[in-house]
Amino acid sequence: MENTAKMNPAENPLGTAPIPKLMLQFGIPSVISMLVNSIYNIVDQIFIGQRVGYLGNAATNVTFPFVTIGMALALMISVGTAANVGLNLGKKDYKRVNLTLGNGFCLALLAGLLVLFFGELFMTPLLRLFGATDLVLPYALAYARIYVAGLPFVTLSIMTSDEIRADGNPRFSMITMLAGAIFNVVFDYIFIFPMNMGVSGAAWATILGQFLTMVLNLVYFRRLKTMQFEVKNMRLDSRTVKSILTLGLSSCATQLAMLVMQIVMNQQTVKYGAMSRFGAEIPLTVFGIVNKVNAIMISIIMGMTVGTQPVYSFNYGAQKYSRVKQLCRSSIIVGTAVGVVGCIILQSFPQQIISIFGSEDSLYNEFAVMALRNMTFLIFILGIQMTANVYFQSIGKPGKALVISLSRQLLFMIPCLLILPIFFNVLGVMWSFPVSDIFSVALCIFLLAKEMKELNRKIAETA
View 1 (cartoon, one colour):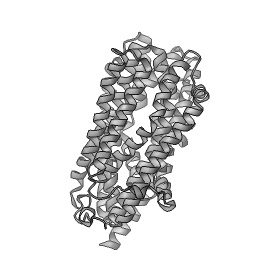
View 2 (cartoon, rainbow, N blue to C red):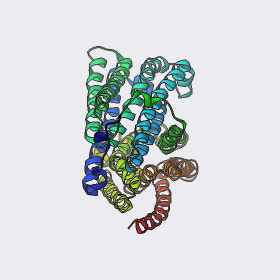
View 3 (tube, one colour):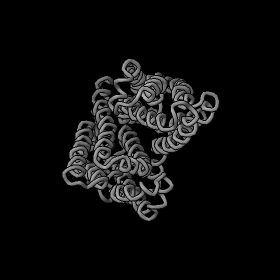
């Protein structure tokens, strides 16, 4: 018999607590988690570059598609599971909640094993496809074989973290991700410097950090408040699997679209950079740095929006549509405000920010400052896009979420990258960012406006 006292969230704070309080409670831990992931990736690069050299960093770059593929599958499953859990909690369908949790866990494990199998089987040809040269390949193999072998830990740590947030405990999810990240940074240093393990040490530190997060999350799974994790629910149910994959598809597509966009951007940068007075290498280096800085700012905005997903799902499932509307409006305001502050900082101190990644000559600095300012001056409008994406995912409308996810990278960014450099040379590459932002946010405003009309109708019907 089910433990109904444990399972009945009659006074679930997701449906009763003030929206601003919930945004802080769920958003801040999510922001910290995403910031940690962005920052310790940079630290990894610093350690490898100082000890191993540029070939080591090149190796991690050519193995990055494995990271992207693993992340794409993990997010598809974790986001889809969390959205379904929230919707079913709102409907008080606890049997479906538990089945969704078990099926999501099984899918995350299978996804990690699937990439592990094909990655190890076709490791060398895949690394060649990802850009490994003869000099880089030995380093890439050393790193990738360890990382790919640990991918099941990665997919499970991501999935379990999202479900702990859906259970109403984003703080614990944040703590376990912080623990894994700190472990990664500390043992990066130990493995690479005192133990002289090179890129293999970096790979071991990364995987063991993810393993630590996964173990801590599984300990929490024994005391879930609003759901129960049972092995019997890991038996895959076609209806549940379809629902998970459908609601999580846009998150997967976003990661894969980013990978395609990165490839096209690098190719255009090298081609048109070589035609400019800056050469190919300066733009290629600078665009990579600006994207890392950009990722830190975006992770703050994204963290605030993604963290509120359980709040959207629960209230929509419970037909508390006025709270859903209030949360959507508040998310846009907060995301835009954070973006404005970030934009002011990036526009005001470009040289100081660039110098964190090393001091170079005047030509390099000229291009770097110009690129940072041009590529990020509309970053504040991305809060609208991220809110819209999370909103449609959370309420069970994956089609619109998928369109939004693909709009910036595929529908707008890639055409801009292919067309603008023809007229503006390498400057067209950097201008592709703000131009595609304008188009993608305009699409989001259109879709959200239509959705708010539908939401107002439901509010009137349930009043």
